[in-house]
Image 1 (cartoon, protein in one colour):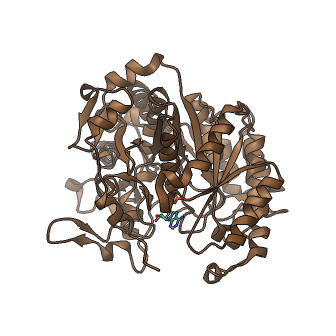
Image 2 (image 1 turned 135 degrees about the horizontal axis):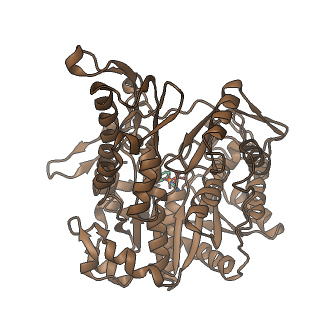
Length: 559
Ligand code: ADP
């Protein structure tokens, strides 16, 4: 057997159309675009305004079972399904998150799909793209600089320097920056204090950019960001620091969705990319809403598995944006099912039909959760070369026996052609009009109640334990009047429980909430169940080791 082509080789051999031709497919003119070279463009504010009165297309949300660390192929299936829908003459638009340089240089590889289902130009998208990450970094750090300047100039607001919650950000995995001391060097160099860096995609500014529905809303949300507390423990906001206007100004281009194309010239909006743990993990609301106006079908994804990404899509993004997914695609792989069926990581390549069958309990749990949320589900079984016919049949037969729409997805190997059956199943689900998003909790429920509902209904936990610290923070949140915000759970993606080593369907477990952090600007309360690293580190052999350029200036080693 020949070795499959790398994602980079496939992308470099692809035929790309000028972006204005892609725009024309969805009724846009060159004047509607702010061009970033020939193959990338931002949609102008005129377009965003003009399309508002148009009817919405259909929304398809792609999620997955709890993933293995390698990812189960959500982005790949999202892109492939968009291509397949187009082959079936449905004008589809793909909406994806923007990759961050942290994972790109680190472990995971690109986030632009894979195989014959990728967005292009993949090199640009994975590297600096249209500069959104830079803009978000600058906007965030402007607020930081103004906080430290405020301290230096006399601290009129009485900020408690030990209680500044706004760190600095950088779009890289760099563990050495997690804890730093700033302001050293004497009176001319600022006020010494402990600080730290998060990765840019963990910035609240990123979450805000992805939830704001207009520039005005963006500014209002930035104003509400809590950056510190004073000695009376009263919150100090970005507005009080006077940084909201400048931060919004720095984001005025970044807020416009980026238009690119897939390997089969399907239009794609790649915009925004918040963390899926301390934030909600979906591409920007403005991209999704605009795509709904421009296409018949919009295929979008939410980070991690259905217990995190899809739950947050339903309770956070859909609430803010008044969205209702018409269907959910639940990506599963034989290797992940085997892992959840008890097989260890180094044995996943060996056929094990029994373990696949055991892993189906987890698939069933997620399908059931989507049902509770009122959403019809189509299982997409993302085929890998190592899967055997019997393993694949075990999943598809089980779905058929339980009346669940399911299809093999071969979009990685064959592009849109490999996703036609899946697309047909999705169209069937959408056209059945079964979908009616039913949130599992009300915003007016108590914080405790909201978290318990998610833990019980979505994870299958019996109860939730709040540490003393979390209880204290819950009281503070109530006192500050932030109780009615939705919950953003920060939990391991690898398990239904909060223990990353517990694979498969779990029962009889409790979830421990260790901390509760308000993201008042983004508009949610983050409930932390484990240690979440908001500044990841590089692995022993980072992907960056393989990267470089060849003699013609082309990228090498970018997966
Ligand atoms: P996710 O969005 O779930 O994190 P991705 O779509 O980014 O996952 O895929 C993760 C990696 O797995 C990518 O490098 C992609 O090329 C690869 N991949 C996805 N599907 C397949 C498949 N069917 N066969 C082989 N590799 C795949």
